[in-house]
Image 1 (cartoon, helix red, strand yellow):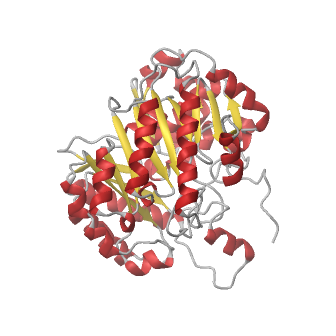
Image 2 (cartoon, rainbow, N blue to C red):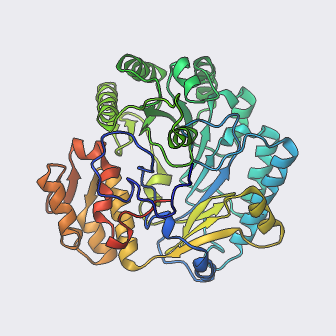
Image 3 (cartoon, one colour):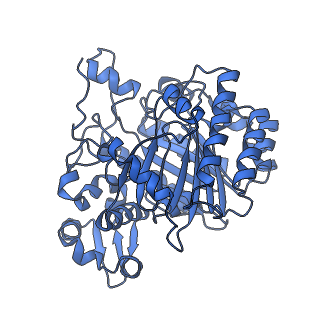
Length: 449
């Protein structure tokens, strides 16, 4: 089997109307595409850290905890399932050292954190006796007691009462629980480590800790899903009574277990739901959640109307916030420059233990690229405020992206008013597939990652 080309086109950059679920990234998390980031620009990232920040720019911290009990068959993140207690301790020490070096740079020195995100992997994998010292060391460098939100991803089977107490004690307000599905057969087939009884076991423990927000993640289109099983998962999610619910549609980036099996042509490679079916499941779920008291926050997330819910990490990243990245493969954004750390365990640790930072590749954006980035990411909310872009960038986005918006309106996927641009329901359900229309020509059809 040949390796995929570094320039192989993917749905996340192509002008495609997808039918079958094929191999390639679909979900758009940044712009320009990661394949445009390069080692030659690492010096520009260093220079950005030595510049004063742009006034009014919020600052976040992303902490990558790359450990898991198992690797899900659809997972494309940098994760490890083979690290022992000593190795994990070494990694957590590196996180502390890395933040200490960032905190002393002119672009960060003296700034307060507006949001913190523990992502993975599985942040809840690490023991409480490791988590608490890590948080203490990080907060001695950059306190987050005044942050608007501290968010933390969890896998149900890794949680205990004492671990939840530890997570709450470090200031976490938004707990995101990776449920994905309530059907044990589907969870097992897709390589999830937890089972449904663990989802229910942790519910009362979570509520007892008084987290401001419990978010539940679901995936539409997991292998083995049917209309019957999906409807049951939707019903059980409502009964679970979370504060917010996020639905992702299953995709197959190149480096997943499922993608590799399909590329090899394995006879037992599973069948995948097509995009039309996944959109129908997604739409059905959102209809049921709305009837149950939720309202739409973005193309993926619904929040309870009667509760104080936020997703500060997404709101701020989509609006051009600076974000410090710590951890293997972690990516961030500082002063208009994208940066990403080494994506290999030994390379990351060596860079930190040698006394430096771990930046592997970077990309210095132009004014146009920053405008495009915020436009496409904020379209994921389902609407844009035209005046906000005029105030920040001094442009009318409708005039600047006339062809893209024209095609959306012609297809009934968006409406353009004097103050707001709004996607239709059909546009929301396929928003990531619409975004390449706004890309500069040089990035269309490129490899996404």
